[in-house]
Length: 230
Image 1 (cartoon, one colour):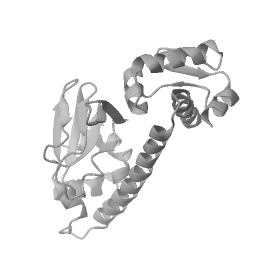
Image 2 (cartoon, rainbow, N blue to C red):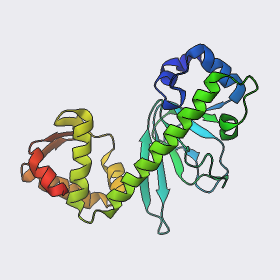
Image 3 (spheres, rainbow, N blue to C red):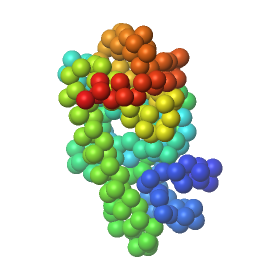
Image 4 (cartoon, helix red, strand yellow):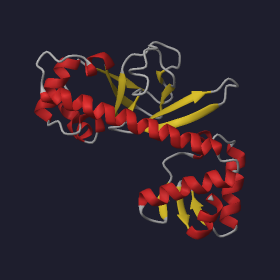
C-alpha cells in the first residue's frame, strides 16, 4: 500500500535513516491511516480531537491559527514529505491547536503518536531511529516557532518584509527566487494586512531595492535590504 510513496518517505525527516524494507515493518507496527482531501477542505480543525501526526504525501496543506479576534496567522505551508501536528502529538491535551486546510487536492498520512514513542513488539532498531528523529523534529519546530515570535516582535512592516526576503535569498542561494507563499498567505504569516503588504512591496520596487512579477522576486540591492532589516 505504501510503496508508491517511497520517494516521499525518503525525503521525510521522520523516516531518515530507515530503509524502505524496514519502514514497511515500522508501518505494520504503527498502522497509519491515509486520507485524501480536496482544495479548501479541512484536514484538521483547532479544538477538535487530535487524530495523529500528519505527513503530507501529495499536494500541500496550510497550517494556520486564529487569534481571539478571528484573524488568521499562517504557521506553515507544508508539501510532500513535510509534517504537521508534531508539537501537539505529545502535549497531553488531545486536541488540535491549529487548523490545517488543503491548499489543493492532497493526500495525508496520519500516524498515532502513542505508537511512535511506545514500546515496539519487535524492539527493532528502526523504531528507535524513528523516536530519535521525532525528538530532533520537535526540537527543530520549537526553534522555528521561536523565529516566528521574532517576526511578530519586529514593529515595522518594512523590517518584516526585509528579513523574510533575506531568508529566502539565503535559502535559494540566488537573488532571484520564487516566494513559497502566496501574497495573502505571506500577509497572514507576517501578521499584517494584504493591502499594506502590497503597498510596501511596491514601494521597495519603486525604490529599486527589489523587483517582482507574480511570485517571482529579484533582490536588486541586498545591502539596502539588510539595512532595513536591522
